[in-house]
Image 1 (cartoon, rainbow over the protein chains, first blue to last red):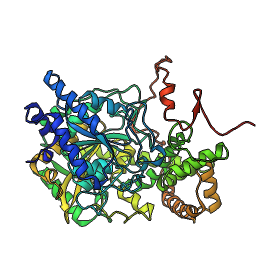
Image 2: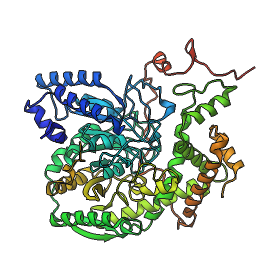
Image 3: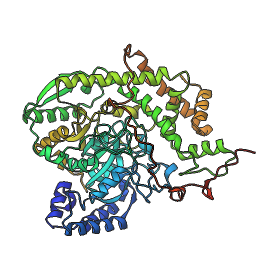
Image 4: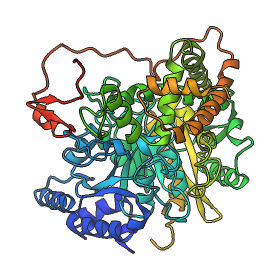
Length: 485
Length: 95
C-alpha cells in the first residue's frame, strides 16, 4: 500500500513504529503536491520549512517527546495567519501580505509537532461554494478535474481527497468545510461556534465563522480537534470549557439507543434522487448499528439561505472595512486623494463576489433598511435555532444530505449568484444555530462522492465523531480514492 | 429591478468601492436579485421573537485593562504600502 493511502491515525502508528521518519513522510507528500500541481489546491508550498519542521519532529521523537500528531504533515487553509508566510485569503488585496503573527490554530498544531506543507486555495475571503472566486484561480476536484471541489475550503478538500496532505484545516461560515468534504469524498467537521479559536483566522462573518478539519476519517478528525480546540483569551467569543478526549471518546462510542432525527425538509424538491438514496442507505446502516430513526420537523429551514444572505454580508461589510490600502495589502497607484485611495484599492483589490457581498451588507445595514433586513433576519435566525432546540428534545442528532447534488462543473454556476447560494441550503442552518456538524462520505453517484450530514447539539462533537467512527467501521466509502491519485 | 443604478452607486460609495462602468450594470442586476431573494424574510412569523445576536447564551467576557502587547510597529509596518519615520503615508488630507 502506498503511504499516502493511509489515514493520519495509521501514519501516526507508522511513525511510532519507526516504519518511516517524518522527513520521509514529508518528502513523499511534497512530491505529490508537485506532481499534482495542476489541481491548483495550494497557493503557497513550503518545502524547506516543512523539511526543517519534519527533522525537528523526528528529533523530538528520538527524545521520547512525540505525541500522536508529531511529525504528521498538514495543510492550512490560506485564511489562517502564518507568521512570516504569505497569507492571502484567496484575494488580490492580500496577495503581498506576510502575517506578523500565527493564528491560535496554527500555534496549537505547531506545538503538537505537526509539519506545515503549505497554504491551500480557497474562495476569496471564504465567500463562495466552488473555489471559483479565488484570485488564484479555480481548484479542481480530483474525482473529475472538470468539476469544482466545492468551497470555500476547496483547496483543503482537494488536497486531502487527492492525498496531497493527510489532513487540512478549513473554516465553515455556511458550509465551507462540509460542502467541499462531501463533494470530494472526505470527512469534514465544523465544531460548535466558540470551540476553536478564531484568533488569526481572517474574519468573514464573525457570529458564524468556525475553524475545523478536513480529514480522511472521523478518527483522524478527533485527534486533530483535540489539539485545535480550547479556550483562547485572544478570541472574545472563545468558550471556556474543558476539551474532551475526543479520540478516547469515539473508541467507546455505542449507537445502541441513539435517536436520529430525520427532517422531511432535508428531502424535499431540489434533492438529487440518487443523493437521497445514498443518504437513506447510510441511515439504514446506522439503524443496523442500533440507532432509531425519528421524523422531526425544521419548519423554517427554507428561510436559512435568505437569512444567511443578510446576516453574513452585513457582518462581512463591517469586517472587510479594514482593507483600506493604508496599513497592509494592495494599494492602487496614482490616486488623487484619500477617498480615491480607499475606493480604488478596494475596487481593484476585491473580486466581484466579495464586492457583491460587501454591497449587500452595506445596503442591509444602511439607515432606513436596518429593521427590514438585518433585524428581521436576526429574528428568523432565532426561529431556525428554536426549530433545532425542539428537535433535540426528541432526538440526539439530526441527519440528512450535505448537498443537494454531487460536484458541478467549473463555470456552471458562476453566472447567477443565487443558484450558487442555494448549494448551501442544507448546511447553513447549523452555522446560524452555532451547532457542530459533520459531513461523512456515504456513496458515489455516477462516480462522484456524496456526503451524509450530521448535526449535533452544542458541544456534542464527541457524539458526532463517535457516530461517524462507527459508520466508517461498517462501511468503506471514506477509503475510496479518486482514480489516478 | 428593486434597486436603481443610482442606488447601487450610492451603496458603492458608502462601501468605499470603485465600480467600473462595465461592472455596474451586472451589479445592479445581481444586487436587485439578491434583495428580491431575501425579501421573503418579510413574511416570516416573527411577532414577539427576540432577535438573535449570538449562537450561544454568552455574556461578553471582560478583562483587566492591562498592557499585554509589546510594541511591534516596525514588524507591522513591513506590510504597509508606504511608510516614513514610523508613520503610514496617505495622500494629503489637510491643505
